[in-house]
Image 1 (spheres, rainbow, N blue to C red):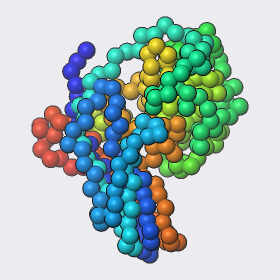
Image 2 (cartoon, rainbow, N blue to C red; image 1 turned 60 degrees about the vertical axis):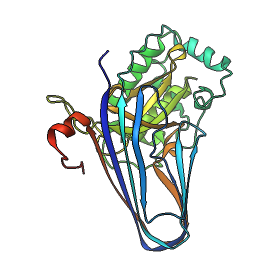
Image 3 (spheres, helix red, strand yellow; image 1 turned 90 degrees about the vertical axis):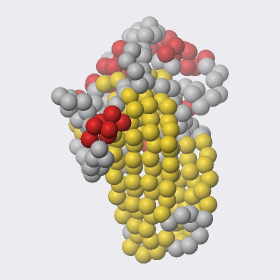
Length: 305
């Protein structure tokens, strides 16, 4: 196994309102949750203007949340998150368990930790169950198949079924709509895969994170690398959670920086909240993920758009 790969991650979000809003409250989920194989350092979260209060919390899933409150009217907000992460290459899943084995093990589990498979067996706010998706996935997810091989095959099937089309959906698009349309973004591909797995009693979770924006020479840039990315964790019994990226048709590896894991996008949304007012909100963001050795070779460089 090769050594760790180290990245510097920068994420800037700019919110603006057509008219000032009052009593603004936000949940910011940009601080990475502890994840096996990831070592986080130099993490910071800077807001302008400075909120009246900011409280860090964790849970209920694998999510770190900073809850901020503003007392003065707010017309603009800038959120800048940055951290360094060293990622150890994950080991290849090796379990020989079948889908039926995993179903039985999940049903018998009494694990009450955040790593438990139990919360990821059922429909959630966005990733609801759908009969058409269940029927489509049935031949891939037959009970006697290897859980790892079936997850690989489903990853490929979703990649082929749901074409990646930037801007073709919103954060509230249900998986059945993306499935019927045959297009979407990483969020939709992940939700469809999750809905398929849960429809067959296989625990599946939604991961929010980042991709390396500068691949090694000779390799193509991964789809979804200039924004936050989404992929799927499948509970594989003895191997625990194994991450698959249907957008890029591969296992998650050292190009994938995990921030949080929940039941669907709603649990790990990078920023949401409430305010008093009726002003139109405009949101812009910029993401840059650079390998440390590349930064040393190239200097400060130019951030990704």
